[in-house]
Length: 305
Image (cartoon, rainbow, N blue to C red; front, side, top):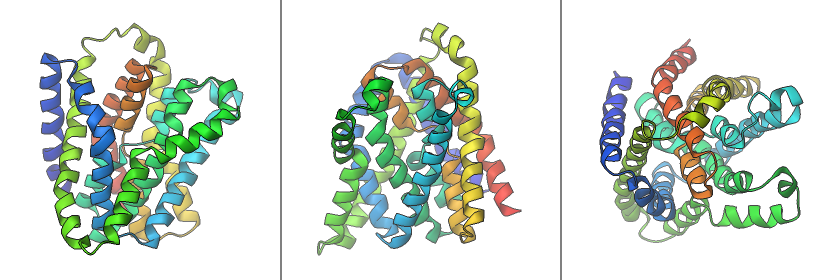
């Protein structure tokens, strides 16, 4: 029943975006720019304040970094595996999920209330990394990536990332005398941002029928590999980590479901801003989102065993 209610919120938003995108192609750019600058930080502020700024938040963020870092290391350490997903956009897409705009609503719908802080912690850790290294990875060559300029670029990207701004904003609000009132006020904008992000997915879905798909056809093998790694590989890694270190069941469930989230909308926004592999990013986000409507309930049933 919870899954039905979740889909009832998700599908209409994507459908509206699809219809809007069919009539106005540039609408995605119009929405995405203020979404990155203001929407995502405000959304994270609201979610962080709602869940509470406590130690489990940091623990979950750290575990997200471990799982994502492990998968990224595997994808870039061995020649045979490098050829499995050689495209950097697809590598980002199979390691970073839509944990904020789909993963957190899933947590709210399927798990107890106290699981929310684990889901937000995972989202925070992943979001800081994706906005920190994502633009650099897509803009840089392998030579640039190992240069001294990388450190400066990484630090600048992290401090200017929406996730970092949201965290700082939440800390400021949390320390103010208006904490509870502002927390309540920010919850509604947080939900609005989620809706807008889902609308963007729908808009980009409508682009598939207009876009030049010749590049996508060439990359289809790698897109399929990225789908497998995102929807099966990453949650499996997180499940193994959770089992080995014996996490509480609720924390394990929250982190595995976050790992199983489809490719992040942020991949679309980053590829759009850098003009790199936009068609592949669109295909991966759309296909992973559609397949996740089946794979996430399957993961939820596995966790219940």
